[in-house]
Image 1 (cartoon, one colour):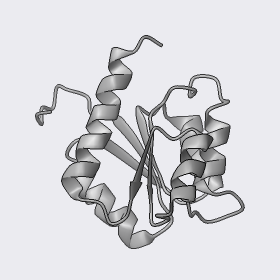
Image 2: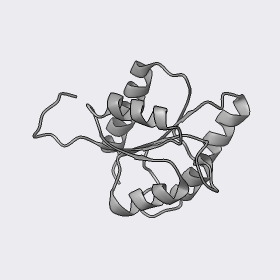
Image 3: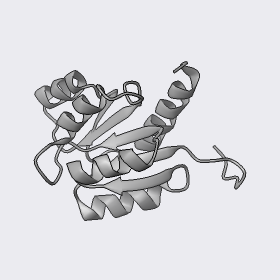
Image 4: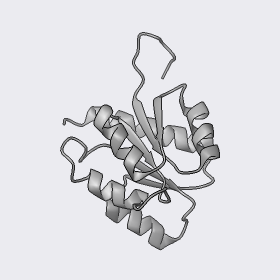
Length: 135
């Protein structure tokens, strides 16, 4: 993807509770995506009510009562968001964590730390495959 002011960037919602990770992800991904950040169930739904996102980067651990897997499961039942790509990026690295994430509806499960190139390519590929699928 080239940086072109005439081309609208895909919209990415980063759902991450750690402030340092939020800032890094925003700085790293803003060249390729229109990035918005949330850290809790409440801010997640606030963002969804305002913007139609192309892809979601979801952490498992979040502030508040619900974790990223619960939000993903709820998202899969929402009109218009059943097929949005959800990429899970988590420090939870056990097989059961991966299985739980996939069962909740995430499309790809990545563990922290992840190589920047792998994360970027995964997000770009998710948007590309979404664009190729009819709604």
